[in-house]
Amino acid sequence: MGTRPTIHDVAMRAKVSPATVSRLLNGSARVGPETEALVRQAMDELGYVPSRLAQSFARGSSRTIAVLVDGEGESLQGNAFLMTVALGLNDVLADADYSIRIINGHQAMRQSRQTASEWTRERWMRHEFDGVVITNPTTTDTLIEAIVQAEIPAVVIGRYPHAEGLIEIDVDNVGGTRMVTAHLTDIGHRRIAFLGPPDRLTVASDRRQGYLEALTRSGIWPDPDWFLETEGTDLEVFSFDAAHRAVVMAAKKPWSWSAVVAFNDEMALGAVRALLESGMELPRDVSIVGFDDLPFARMVNPSLTTVHQDIRQLGQHAGRALLAVLRGRKVADLTIQTVSLVIRSSTAPTRDLTTVDLEP
Image (cartoon, rainbow, N blue to C red; front, side):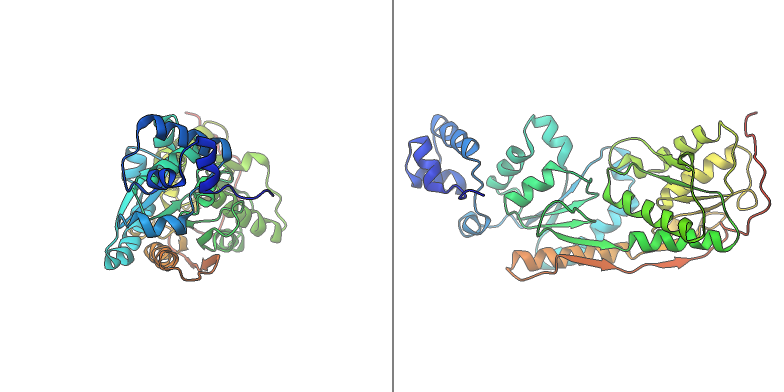
């Protein structure tokens, strides 16, 4: 690996003084548009990324934390998981006099027609935020990598294995889904579908792994048709509507599953709606389970068997970790929060199931 370019290298390439580059980076004085263009071109050509530590002394503080999401409209506003995480973040950050700004990072990047590095660097240099909380990371994400490269204080809720040193706050997704799937096999279910988003999301991959581990331990080998995959943006794929659409499509063919493991509670309810519309009775015909234990899970009929995680506490953990980083303290690279199984009335021992044709 070559030597990292410095502010002096940028100044030499742009044919300006190091002080001019410094003023541009820190926003301490106006720089003419032609000069700014030369400096930015030099930075791009050299791959220069401003040092977070050096900038932090000169730039001051915005007292704002960016929460990066990928979604819009109802998929964002109605996302109970994200809103509960935001409450947990606010519990911690408000006490430290920080406010939260939710940003659809990928959408904003596309609208501005900027690369991930350009978008990240521009907002950092404008002092728009002091740190970042990243939600729902995909298996590869150029925006996360740009944030890490720019040395911006960041915490991810979930896992992102490709950025060394990134602080991750997660729950035991593999263990939780294994636990709830094992509950179904323990009460006799052998044909169990998995309803979830694509594997491009790390949390989806983890929960699918837990499902597969539970089946394998029970000597069950799932058919590829057992995976009911939702479609949409990285927030839409977790939604009630996406789950409803996926199960409606599956129910157009002969139905042979005695149980469904849904990725989360909201998707479980979308599946329940689709199954009831198809004339099935729960849990007599199909048992269903979720993940999260959101408040509505115990309010619906049948009440939902699910995996309990403390979502608000997850946000609090992320907030504390980010504050520690902002204050220059050492933080563990990975924190895993435990989960537990909650058995309610949406699951029941299996009957002898023959294929059910749901076509009218």
